[in-house]
Length: 355
Image (cartoon, rainbow, N blue to C red; front, side, top):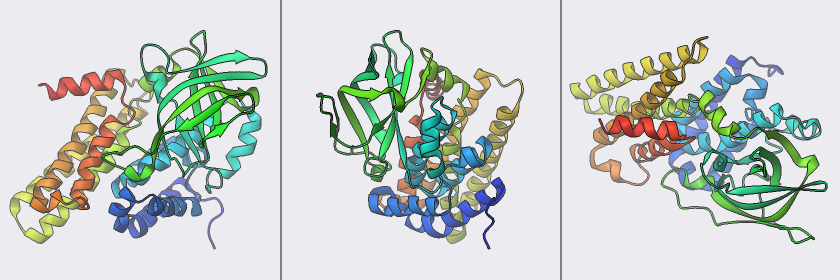
């Protein structure tokens, strides 16, 4: 009989077994086929794995990120939108929304996306919120929302006149309001990696967001501040991507029996172990520094790129096939290099590349 209250370790073991048996064999299909990706996401939902940060804590969630990215970058990228939305909702101040949504997130009966990365950008706000009686009028363009036709709603971010950040719940479907407000979406973008995740842009015109759908109002530049504080968060996708590259190299080492492939695998495997250990130590350190976390983030990005390029090399010309595992992992390394990228990460990455 299944344990009704599994430990974080049991949840992670359940997740990895599912990913190994049901997701890994279909990774190429999941990358390009939204319906196949939908089934894989449902598999996580069936195992109540879609609200891990709420159920099992941050550390288990980061481990889950790495495991998922190892077996399917598309699934890792899609599910983290929902997981992050759930965690944000749980930390928000709207108790009514918590009661409505939180019990339904783990099993996927309510699925949420995110639309506020533009708040990190400098310059004029991309999306503005104007206070009016009973709520806010929202206008502007959200450049990036993943999960069209997967998620029914998304957490929308907008900038108030005083610079504070407003976060609220909005429908992830074209909608027109009686008083003229409207929300519309583009067709899914053509992406190099994880095309199946249906990433779109959103255009809002005097969209009325009622006060009861506001999740939180945060200080000016709070998202950028959180980006500095949670600098290592996206590193776990890179670690998983690096492991995916190593899986390909390890298979080639067995089939081709070339000593230099074995040597490369062992060297990269050691580097991955060292990078992972350093990241976990820094996360748990009472004296964690921004500079050290930035250094580790770039190490993880570079490691994913190196392992994916090595997977390309050992796969020879067949790596150029669109559905070859090495080709997919190579593109996923690109995706995770820029996911959650801040100005600081961009600068540090460029400095490292320019050496």
